Length: 117
Image (cartoon, rainbow, N blue to C red):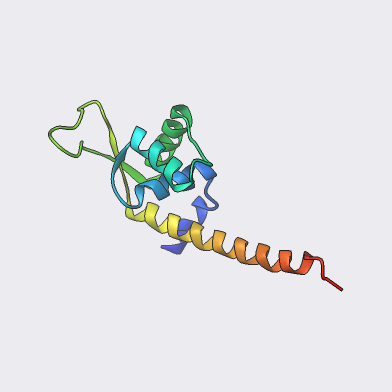
């Protein structure tokens, strides 16, 4: 599975946030945008064009799939998206990569910190 994951890394910020938004539940486009804003405390916002371009790419790569609407009361025009197993593996791998980047950054920043006399 690792060899299947490597070609997708590193994820773009938009793809990372979309996959993370879909990690907990199936969502429609607007729900994905809201979840991204929530998870980033409003620091990262994604517009519809960026969202749907990235969703199309992620579906084509086999990381995400379109699903049927969640309930009978849902708007039939809404398309819901689900994270596939490969997408979850790619997300986990990229989070591990980013954890390593943060660890290295913390180490280097400690070295650069001015010392008091």
